[in-house]
Length: 78
Length: 248
Image (cartoon, rainbow over the protein chains, first blue to last red):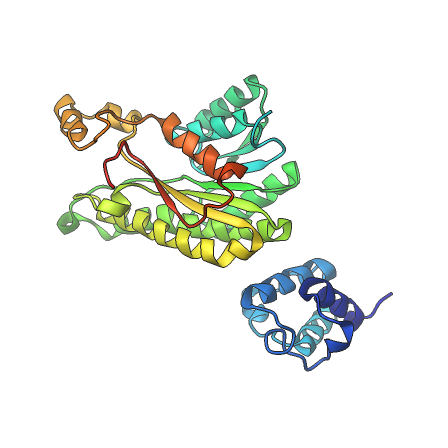
């Protein structure tokens, strides 16, 4: 079973077309990975599907880096 | 072969009038239709029966467009039945006409909630699916009075002008995902509502229409088919006047 980090990384690589090596925990979707605001919305949608969870709009607004996403998902998975 | 074979369309406020005609015309082109209604279940079932009798596919679904939960449930039900949502026609609308000086706050709120907030909520809800599909068509039924203004309809005109602005913004936000968003601004269209108008009022209306006749619901429905089909691939953010030339 792939870890949360691996699964998040795969979603980001597929969605944003970036190289896996660029997907570091501190990387910002917008500043480092070339995502525009709509890409980030879509990314969150795909993470919801991947992890079968709902991420509220308020929570989604706090997710701006790879690390934010991983931490958020891990916290929800308990 | 219809222009919309294999597509799924949600038409809000489709139990009668222009909405019912839109549902039938989209179905005629091959689309499966979610016939949304607010209160008129029997009328909505009639529209469904008419579509099915003509070889199409449709179902009736109750939802209040101004209520987010109700809208979500409608989207979920449509997805579970048909597996995609390719076309949204925001048609549901009400009137509570009154002079501005006499207009009550609830008359203003009711019209804004259904006619403007309803478009926002339905659009937001389907956008998720359309973005995943990387394709979609949204057609908003505005009104020519949203362009020209109309005495006695401050709430309705404000809502319809709002819909035109919302159409342009949504078009810009979603263009990169291959989702086209346009509005139609019907002029005087014969419906149950205009049938009741006195002859002299109708005669007065006609003097303002270069084509010198009222429009039919089919005139609007055909424009919707155009904006929902691949024939309009290079058109987004526009408001198409279907009004016999009344406002140019």
